[in-house]
Image 1 (cartoon, one colour):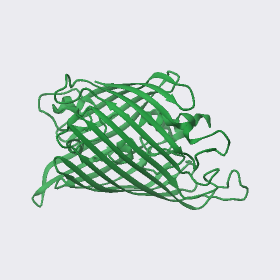
Image 2 (cartoon, rainbow, N blue to C red; image 1 turned 180 degrees about the vertical axis):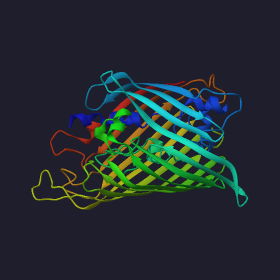
Image 3 (cartoon, one colour; image 1 turned 45 degrees about the horizontal axis):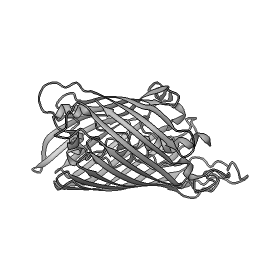
Image 4 (cartoon, rainbow, N blue to C red; image 1 turned 45 degrees about the vertical axis):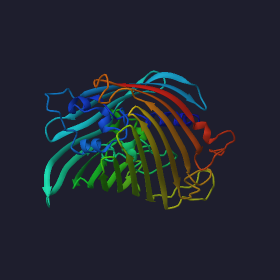
Length: 431
């Protein structure tokens, strides 16, 4: 149980990791704040969404740009239970940008401090694209593309889904589309999707994924114990309506993922998992002095289990053959002058009752809140430099329920949901 006390601190750092990198600013000649509401990310503006849809290929045409960037993150972490620490928590290298007029991509290689000043290097998110732009259908604009990626939902242009927003409810279980779920497929699969944007409003995407072999995960820096299992017949679908009104933006979308999962990989029975979700986003951009962004994501997962194991604490009680998991995230962010951002997220993960699978209370329900305050002084049109950027952040992550309870969360006195709470100060620099 003690190893779980760091989950709040680890999650609060993971969900504030920025995705704005100076290499794109150098390539396009545009400021980071053109693509992101805050000049260090992560939320995308409509301009940033179009850049992603165009395969990261837009350019200012002023010669070749080296498609490499780096990021360093230092953290002061103060968990509710456990020792405080000061350390360099992350070092990243990005290979990102335009290869040709129709080919571009995003590749992140990250090294994370394990807490003992040892860095574990691994391949993080990957999104390689081929895109055909400036097509016409019925007299209206059409963009078609192919994305090869390793994290279902990361490639989404609206950046509201958990994999793209880096916000997914933590807990003892969770949906396949939530990277915070145990044995999530994020970064441990490879897949390809075909997407299209019609009339700058209607977006659709279809694709499939296969999980990596455990040996491949190990070579790419991932602990095989987090293996998502062997996936069969996996399908991914995404449809959304987007409306850019210059000073405002609105989107409404649906997402689906279905798969058969063999976990562990023993050749035994498989679970059938189906994720169905919807998301709503709204942005008030105005003249970019005051920006308000709201998003709500609701994903329900239906499970047909391949086995019904016995309860570890109640002799004769078997697990149910079917169940559901439900993840919801509500996020509100206010950005002032593209430099100061206050963000609040409410994250809820619930599941149907199963006294054998979810010990000791029979439900996995978890509720948490994240409050973050950012300051990014560079990355705007009038900034001193576009070659580098800086972000200072204060993050407070707070649990009100974990594993179905507020107190005695593991069925033993002295364990409380608030033990996962954590406060952190981070300093990130990208160049």
